[in-house]
Image (cartoon, rainbow, N blue to C red; front, side, top):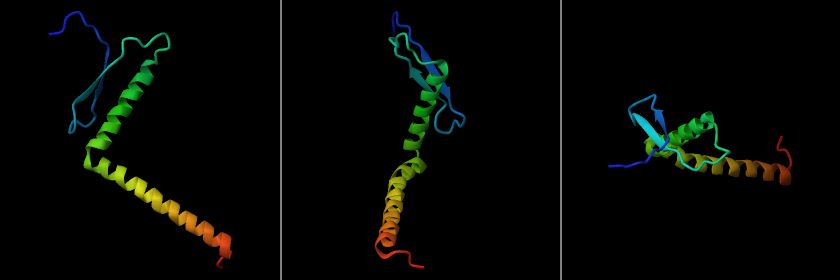
Length: 92
């Protein structure tokens, strides 16, 4: 039972209800005079929901593991090409 507490909430409804129906975000009470706009609050809530979906689904977890690996390989290949051209000149 909650007595005398009033909170502002943002409810983000899922376009695909397979994972969740809605996400509820409680806004801080002391946002101050420079409170973000409604659009900014909704954008942040949507971003948090998107990040959660990516981390909670197998496809999102695979992407988060695979992406750094691919960037490492790409960086190594680019460095190899650079050093080969720098030390040995063009091969053509």
